[in-house]
Image (cartoon, rainbow, N blue to C red; front, side, top):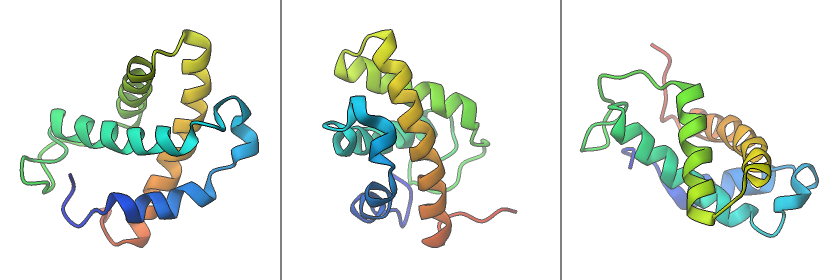
Length: 113
């Protein structure tokens, strides 16, 4: 987990901002999927060295495209989604990544050096 990052705060920021009408096929799963996406995102950052074992910034750069693929694949596997559902999850993860970035910025957890 990223130092200073609070999953509950992130969920409280992200969930009300998700366009639920835009994800009708997933509407009953959105809250659960976003929580899973945060976990997968953190796992991705640790595995790729973006975060070190203490949750501090590591030596690696966060690759949005790689992170996106990792998260979608993790959620598809975790929930047994077929390729059609995985595409729908991808659309949700696009929204998640944008809102997660906003959350990190407003929480003061990222700086662009």
